[in-house]
Length: 238
Image (cartoon, rainbow, N blue to C red; front, side, top):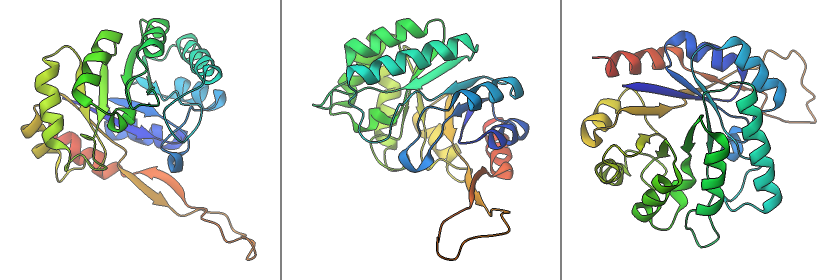
């Protein structure tokens, strides 16, 4: 049983590894659902983290239909991740009709080889999840991160279970979003998954001493609940 932790800064990645994470999904920009980490962020994490790291490759927030220019950006970022010797990448492409962008997904999976490819929660926005799963298997994706097409995986668990059965070990179904120490055992038992995903996200206060009162802003920083990671690890290792 493998635990992947989604992180949004270098300090959080380090803390997640120390707490027992098996793999890191590396992102920037939590507010927009995650975007591609910068070069400096990628290189620093690669130097400091010894467990597998899968950077998210997403050039912008918003929808999951990408122009050819954006596809080219994704390709270049994938090649950079190969150069930096990451173990995998995370991306997701949809057509405007809600189907999987099969042509570009297959090309990018081929370009990423031998890296693992996780198709992210763009899957939860697709039109036909069971047909889409077959498409992703044909494209050569390693796994799908999904909450069962609901905001929280506990609500989408019936679909996650169906997808695991449909996948039949041809692709990994990894549940995430709302997964925590209080429900992870139920999710594992219900859907028979072998990997789980969470951010275990908390907010910590900024230590900035001065704040302009005319510029009201949230300076708090995304971090990870180390104790929560340890609890989840203890549960899934039983």
